[in-house]
Length: 327
Ligand code: TYM
Figure 1 (cartoon, rainbow, N blue to C red):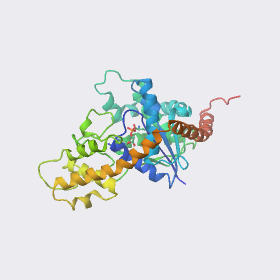
Figure 2 (cartoon, rainbow, N blue to C red):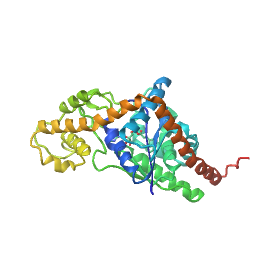
Figure 3 (cartoon, rainbow, N blue to C red):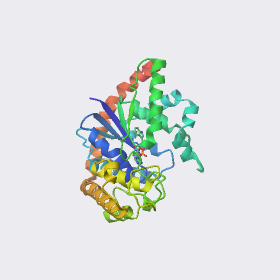
Figure 4 (cartoon, protein in one colour):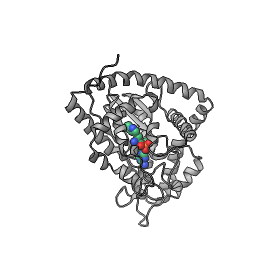
């Protein structure tokens, strides 16, 4: 079976882009691959976090992954900091990556541009992400389009390490969806929907009241030419609605476009499809929240399974590097 790994940061509420671009495909992949899914709490530390909020957000995120349909009997669901090998391999990856390579990462440039404080971790973040992936001999990484460049780097680092020290890591491939790889903000369809972006009306949260989500879709920004056509470059707002509807109903957005002549019915159907996608997740989330100990116990088991894979891999890496054997 191929090995699949992916992660999500516990930094703010999960939004529709996370769900359609990544999480729903994690659920599909767990049945055809040996999959590991990770709440990447160490990645959240690149900007200062309130400890109580980070703790709560991490737990809620794990619960949401279960509510979306990750089955802990099939997949390995765990928290990054519970497996210390991630941080150890991250250092090795920092020493494998070139400074210039990390400096070229567009996400680093976007996030550091104009920021008051830029941590060293924000810069080396992609090395930790490569470590997450390479630690588990991952074949495939289901992510949204915004992670494409980080995945390229992970591949380059695996190849470079293998060339220097002998075959050690599997070279992973990004798995980016054909539809909804980049869900756009409903009010600013020229920028991606994001959990950290300050655009509450343009961002649909997976756990927000369904009526609010419906209202946001109905008020989505479109354009003035009145033609329904799937053309992300020239008609970003309308194409975003078609992509959301397509992802929620498993239909090709260009085919969907032929069914509509006006924006009103497209918005109504998209709102309905979003509501139908979110409602069962919210119901399951509420059930799981009634028993917090359950999620914590599952995460403990997940970490044990992950550690059983990470420990021998890291031992091999130490040996390859020439670090003295322990004891
Ligand atoms: P994060 O937490 O920002 O996002 C989690 C996943 O959601 C996808 N995504 C989107 N997809 C479509 N449209 C959008 N608007 C949208 N916004 C977010 C992201 O592409 C991602 O797949 N660096 C990663 C977390 C990470 C990771 C890893 C991922 C750490 N280590 C190892 C894969 C493998 C991140 O910040 O994702």
